[in-house]
Structure formats: C-alpha cells, structure tokens
Image (cartoon, rainbow, N blue to C red; front, top):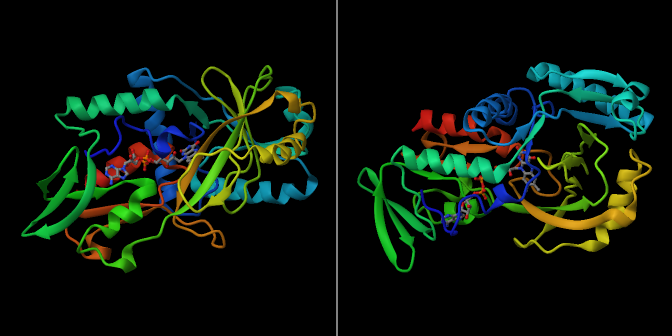
Length: 334
Ligand SMILES: Cc1cc2nc3c(=O)[nH]c(=O)nc-3n(C[C@H](O)[C@H](O)[C@H](O)COP(=O)(O)OP(=O)(O)OC[C@H]3O[C@@H](n4cnc5c(N)ncnc54)[C@H](O)[C@@H]3O)c2cc1C
C-alpha cells in the first residue's frame, strides 16, 4: 500500500463526522445503499471484535416545519425499500426523549451510531501488517503503465523507484483524478474530475443535552447541518457545504450566523456564545454543484478496459460506514 503521507488516514478519513450511517437516503440498488447497509453491520462487528470505541446512539431525522413532513415520508419509504429500520415519531413524543428539541415530527434510526475513526484506522493498519501487507508511508504514486501482464509503477519516497504489480487499486479520494490521469492506458472518458465540497464544523462548549444524533432533512448535496457528537460526547454541528476550487482546510468563521439560524430551527435554546469554529473536511465529489447525487464509482476492466485496474472515485459519505463492505467487494473482484 502506497501512502504519500507519514501516517494512515490523514486525508478525508480524518476530517469527517465519524457517523456509522444506516443507509435510508440512497437510491434503490445503488452502491451507496448496498455498501452502507452491509458496511454498517460489518463495522459494528469489527468494532466489537477489535474493541474500537463506538456507540449505537441512534439518530432522529427531524422536520422542524410542517412543510418538511412530506420529505420525511419520502425518506421513510426509501428507507423501507433499502431495508433500513425506521420508526415514526410525532414532535411531542420526541420531546419526551430529547426534551430540548422543538420539532414537528421525526424518524428514529436505531442503527445509526458513532465510531472513533483514529482507533478504526489503527486497527485496519494492524490487520494489513499482520497479514504480511506492507504500508509504505511517505511514498507517492507518480505514474503507471502496462508492461506485459503487469503494471510498471513509478513511486517516489526520497527518490523515484519502480515496482511491478499485476493489480492496481486507485483509492486516493481527493487525488483520484490526478492519479487516474497518470495511469497511462486509462482513457480520459473513464476519469471523473473531482469537485471539492468543503464542510465546516462548529463545536459547542456547553453541556450536551442529547442522547441521539439529530439530522435535519437532507438536500441534494449533503445530509444537512446536523448535530453530532464524538465518543467523549463533545457536541458539534455541521458540515455545511461550500464548493471550493482547491483542497484547503481554512475555516470561514462568517458562516456562524447561518449555523445559528439553522440550529435555532430545532434547538431554540442553543447559546450562540458557546458555538466556536472546530474543523473542516473536503468531500471528493464526482458531481458538480448543479448535478444530483452520484453513486460511488468503482470501475474495472469490463468498463474501462484496463486489465488489473480497479479505480475508485467519488468516495464521499457514506464511505466510512461502507469501508469494510467496499474492501470485501474490491477483494472479490481482485
Ligand atoms: C465533511 C465530511 C464528513 C463525512 N462524514 C462521514 C460520516 O459521518 N460517515 C461516513 O460513513 N462517511 C463520512 N464521510 C465520508 C468518508 O470520510 C470518506 O468516504 C472516507 O473517509 C474516504 O476514505 P478514502 O480512504 O477513500 O480517502 P482518504 O482517507 O482521503 O484516503 C486516501 C489516501 O490516499 C492518499 N493519496 C492520495 N494521493 C496519493 C498518491 N499520489 N500517492 C500515494 N498516496 C496518495 C492520501 O494521502 C490519503 O491518505 C465524510 C466526508 C467528509 C468530507
């Protein structure tokens, strides 16, 4: 495994919400729906096995206005088609469980939870090494071309060197378009340009009065400005969606007003004084700002024609939840 950084999981994987999603939003038979459901189950099993900190908190998807109830209905129906457990709640019933919430109605997803991502990455690293895999840190993929039945791959640590491999798996997230372009036999028509969609998170320094994660109804591009927390119950809000031209993690503090307005829709007593900038993450999207949600893209020889190449792009949410299921799928294709 080639990794250009000095540590594993420092890319998209270290800047997300750490949520184990249940998979109610994704279109029928999409890879996102299939891998999310399977990945959810596998990740809980793996976390139990490896003693990774996690918590099946459950989540409420909420309608804070009457007009949003039809959107909840749509999510409920899609969830049932996808095989996701969902329970319908009225606003006053939700108040008994989450007393500070002020909403019209909601759906409870009991299979949603949170996981400590650095612990997960460390466990996966251990598995690779115990299975005699090698992770070459500070080693960048430069280019590959087909030579006989193998790929000749040029890498760089301090200097450039060549390795040979029958199989090449490109899973470089935000760099996946650049990496794809440097695989010589892969035609441009099979390469998606990656669009960068930044998400900001604000943390809340007050007490956390919630037992479940709280998600407003989603839009085309993200799952809305949700309320989440980590294993230590530190409350945070986000991510928003801000399209950017390059990969940077600068924080736009002027978004605070937008966050306050959105949060006050469902938690009127939230104290804006306690809301402070936390971190940002960048989604590797294969859709542009005008397009609808796209599925994960995992292309193989039967589509792009390059024997031995498995090219993964658009690995945005629910990529963390789906990771073990995607891993199994890719292994089966190899
Ligand atoms: C704001 C945000 C919130 C999210 N929330 C959730 C969530 O709650 N639940 C969920 O399921 N998913 C979530 N996701 C999605 C999830 O984080 C990603 O799908 C997942 O982390 C992607 O993993 P990856 O291994 O593909 O990418 P990465 O973790 O970025 O790994 C790719 C690796 O490739 C390396 N690399 C790149 N180029 C080269 C090169 N030339 N040579 C060598 N190495 C290279 C990088 O250094 C990097 O380490 C979220 C994403 C974002 C941005």
